Length: 115
Length: 114
Image (cartoon, rainbow over all chains, first blue to last red; front, side, top):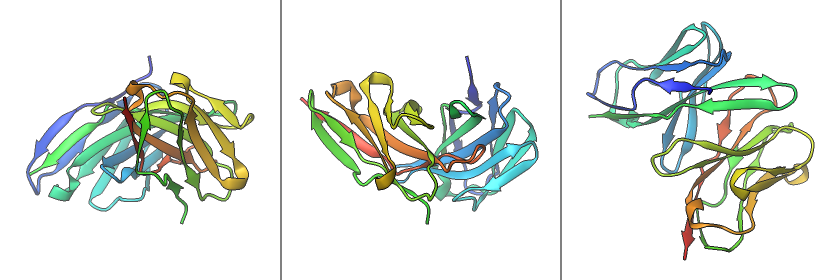
């Protein structure tokens, strides 16, 4: 069974703290993504990575950074957490083949509250 | 700007009635198209996707969607809605390139009345 695992489901952090959200996939996918989900705004892309040590900014990268040292792991880092980063964060990975196109798998999400 | 638009923020449908959720995109090439559903407190579940071929796509839970290139649309339909269909629905696209990210619309919340 394919899996995208987000290590923390619920976190509460203080303003100014450095926060790490970890995501691991076991499908040998090259592409991995971080989204945040907010009511009325849908899912917005923060960063994605198409290979180890490669990263691309998404629509809302400000205040975030990412790390992809190994193919299976993609970390989202909040250098100095702020209350407006309180949200649900979703990790995803994807594969592509010429027959069926993209197949994208999502983790269960990490609920982050910054106080 | 390239985008995915779901014009309806909230829709209420009577149980047993038909449903259509609208989705439009503004990418020049034909993107890969997806519909996801999310129940409260749950993760995203893929309902169906269009990659190529037949423009009428069948999905899970009795849903279907039709890709209309001339209208840049990918509307989701169901002939008879059940109370358990109440959820939030997201249309999403990958702009026709392997390895690029899924871009989401803002979602449509479906309520089902008895």
